[in-house]
Image 1: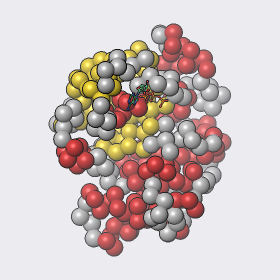
Image 2: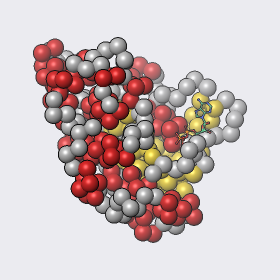
Image 3: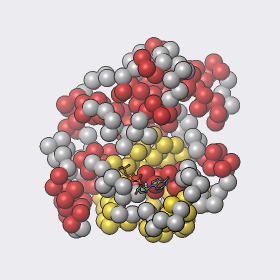
Length: 276
Ligand SMILES: Nc1ncnc2c1ncn2[C@@H]1O[C@H](COP(=O)(O)OP(=O)(O)OP(=O)(O)O)[C@@H](O)[C@H]1O
């Protein structure tokens, strides 16, 4: 059974025409699927629909099944139980997910406490282990820091720790590295790759950058104007794109940074060991 099964999903706001128009796709357990397309094509709306986080003026039809649960029409309560447990999201701007007044370790622990019965001492230990897993050599210092004391890349790694500490089945990443400079982006992607693999978490990775998607994902959905116009493996999309829009994406992607369809080797070589 698919982990995520989206069928004929259509989303419109108010009386305006739909911005997502009858899309269908699946994500299997542990699978990484990239959702790629230009600004405004409906990527974020799709991910918010899966999270059950669309605003009240959204009109939604079709079906989104996460395991046994139908997300469309689910109550807020049912969705908040799913979120942070089986299903989490990493946003582009980590400060939107972080409370500037709270030390980072406590913020990660709060997520853990909401969804588990771990005793406080065990929770603290688990937080430090998780901060180690996202690549911090000094988890104690990071746990005791406020968000503003960290760099953008470090903040994004704290957010990644928050998203993964409850071992979710599916992580939705909405351009998680776009706000970072290229070297830091490579480091964060590498860590994300490693943590997703170690937990065997599935991922729906949203980006406008085909090169970034191909580093992390095995499969790609290409979205244009609210519809999925092409789908395939990452390497297949690079070598044998059919739709003119996809061909344009391939032509303009940063092929200097990746081997089509390969997973991170060049980037790892360039930036191995960088802690930013
Ligand atoms: N709450 C809302 N009310 C009205 N229209 C909205 C709302 N949220 C998104 N839209 C519209 O839906 C369309 C798709 O937006 P969406 O944010 O999904 O695009 P995107 O592909 O994620 O783009 P980007 O890469 O810039 O984030 C856009 O035209 C946007 O203006």
